[in-house]
Image (cartoon, rainbow, N blue to C red):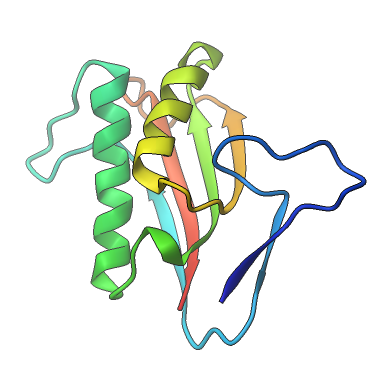
Length: 126
């Protein structure tokens, strides 16, 4: 079971994250390698929104391979190539996660391939 930790002594965690998570009773842990906006056929969409949705689709495919889904996510780290993608990233993440709130980190970084605008890695438990 994944339970959020939001201490009253910290600023309120807003949006689709929590300050921390406690995992109890887990029998399996999946570490999702950094997923990028690369389709199986080797194509990369040009626009951020399409890249973000494809990257999340890749994350969800790894989870599905372990018989897991969004509700199993305990920790998500997103690497953005530019800070201007923050709002679109948050909006799309909200669409994907719904009311599920894992621990979350967003880092502005130089992504491995120039055409990739983001990368997402995650930890899931069941």
